[in-house]
Length: 130
Image: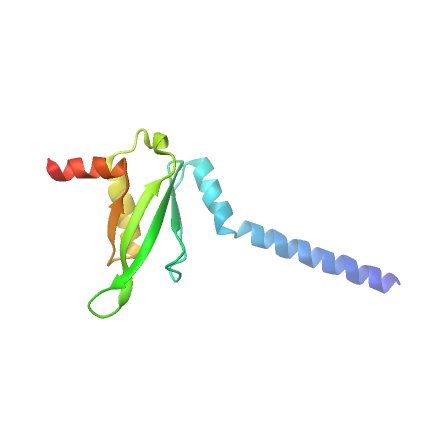
C-alpha cells in the first residue's frame, strides 16, 4: 500500500513538473507577457499558412493573415494583410515602426507583399504620395 502511495505521489510530481515546463515555454503566454511589458514578440507558425500570425510591439497587438500563391518556382506566401484590433492604441507610432514590422515579416516571408488595413494603410499611402 505504501508503495502505491509513493508511486502516485511520484506520478503527481512528474505531471506537475511537466505542466510547469509547458507553461513556461507556451508561446501565447510569451505574447501576452510582451504585450504587458511593451516589448517586441513575433508569434507565428511558419509551416502552417492557414494560421494567422501575431506581433506584439509597444503594447499593441498586430494580426497578420497569410495567403498562399505561386512564385517562379514554388508555392509561397505571396500576400499578407496586417491589421490591429484596437486602432486607438496606435497613438505615438511612426512610419518607421511600420517599416520595422515590414522588415521583420519579410524575414519569414521574403516573397510576400504586405498590405496594411486602415488606419495604417492611410499613413503608409501618405508616404508614397509625398
